[in-house]
Amino acid sequence: MNIFSDFISHYPDIENLPSLNTLFSQINSDMGNSDIWMLLVVACLLLAIHGIVVLMIAGTFHWLSNKLENKRVYGANFVSYFIAILLIIVSHLFEIITWCYVCMALQVFPGNPQTFYFAGEMYTTVGYGNYILAERWRILPIIISFSGIFSVSMSGAALYTMLGALLNRSNQKPKSDPKL
Image 1: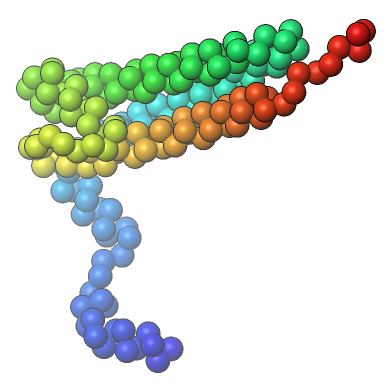
Image 2: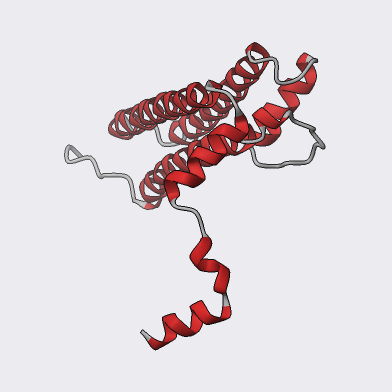
């Protein structure tokens, strides 16, 4: 308890911090629009769809990999892994394009190419561009980047498990034929 009181004595303004409810109310009134809630729903939907797509890609890879191993077609597993990588990349591009269309519908930027670059940079969290956003859209990069971070994490985890399955199979010796 002494440590806490020492901390408070060094930072006297800490007692004046707003409550969480007050903080969110201030942020909501600062943005001045209800489109943010729609953007959060879009982000959640995109994450859910991305998760389902990645699960389908990984499940198909594992199913196909088992089928190919049973038929003793060993090199095709690597091809199926690279096809899975391409499909996951396409899913990320689809999400960037979706964010681009959402931003165009909300008229965040006057030009479409600028909107596409903004969506791509925020989704990948590159942040290279110097975009000036209206005050009501200042939270938009945070929402887009969170969806990108979590989508890439899901993809990375799926690709990691697929690669692990691929490497474990390639290290195993082919099964001997009991008929021989």
